[in-house]
Length: 221
Image (tube, rainbow, N blue to C red; front, top):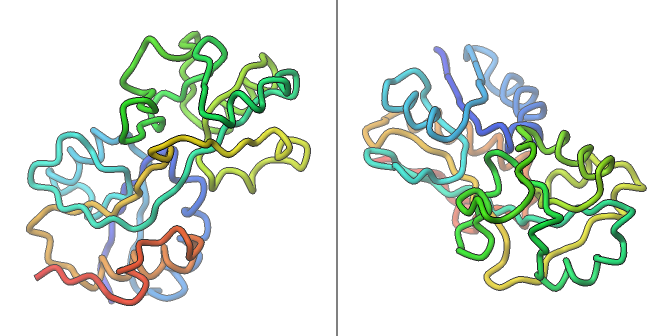
């Protein structure tokens, strides 16, 4: 495979797969000119439609006319709370999330069910500062107290002491997000899409992956 491949990715996803993705992809496809850019969801869709990127790795956007979604893996959210708020651990674990103590991420807390869709409901959470990265959000919680919701793949980035402040949420439906490959519905570079998929499969834990993609390649036509 040769030529160029331009990938856009959501900033709240990028820290986890991108470093290994670059390493594995360039090793497997040394003749491809790879470029990766972080953009918010609306920008990713716009860049896809304009042809400025070939593939997006993101959650499913609201405006998806002309966009083909290929679900790749499911990532759960967990609660991260300040060590000063350890008394709230059981309350948070039960799924009762006290809004006044919650810090919000600018984009990324979009979970496809009403009770957890924090990015839509501005009445939920602390909006003094809407963080643009998970790392900033964790540091805000450590310094100011309260708690937040972080993706499961961020846990390995925490220190051992910080990992003690992680609580898995007992909510139904589960707090999770589907990470997908997004392309224009007339995109024909099947080998490129499968190259991205195979690289993600080598990075993302197997239990997160969509079952049908573990055994089958993507067929565009």
